[in-house]
Image (cartoon, rainbow, N blue to C red; front, top):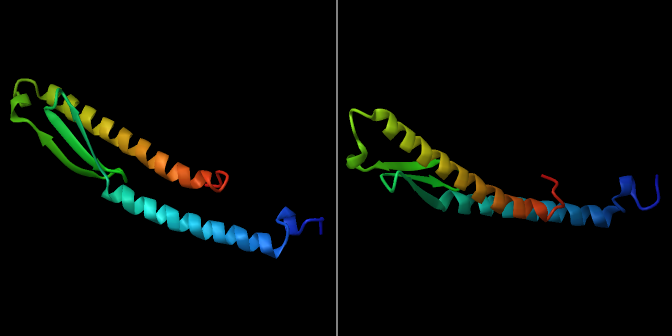
Length: 112
C-alpha cells in the first residue's frame, strides 16, 4: 500500500471526515431543493401581456394572459408571446437552480 493510506485518502480519520462532509453536503442539497421548490419566479413577455410563474425547481405554476392580447386574427403572436414568457421563466429558474446547487457542490471540489 502506498504511503499516506489507501488510494491516497490518508487512512481512517480522513475517510470519516470525507463521509461527514458528504453527509453535510447531502443535507445542504436537500435544504436547497426545498428552498428552490418554495421560490417562485415571475416573468412577463409582450409588455406584461403574458405572465409565467415557475418554481426554482423548474415547475410551471401558472400562466396569465391579458385578454387584450387575444386577437383571433393573430393567434400566432399570442403563441409566440406565451412561448417567450415560458422560455425566459425556465431560463431564470435554471440559473437560480445552478447557482444554488453549484455553490453546494463547489464545497466538495466539484465532485457532483
